[in-house]
Image 1 (tube, rainbow, N blue to C red):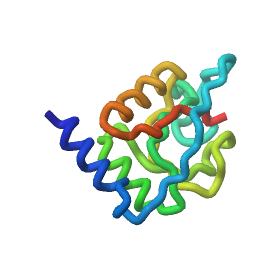
Image 2: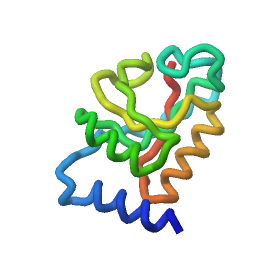
Image 3: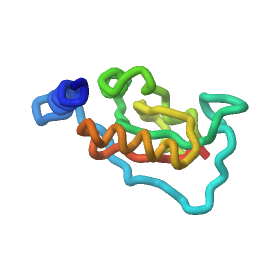
Length: 123
């Protein structure tokens, strides 16, 4: 039963006493997108240009905490690495994926309490 433990850890991190605020953005899922390699991390031959995003923050440490809580498939990158992301933030992401796979990872995050997770294309 890892999910309840993970959900409790996430709630403890993001609750009112956590002291860090995550910038919230709306889900971005265009209907007509190309799903070739991203221009940021992932490089040539990547499965797509879509990322699941679980947190964005001006604090690298806050984003890293969220990525760590979600597991080894999540990592932190600077949003400036992707031309379609708002620059200057640290984001807890998983990807790159095809659009549908990124949405699947978003749903995984939501199942463990990260209700503001969303998918966004790197370009």
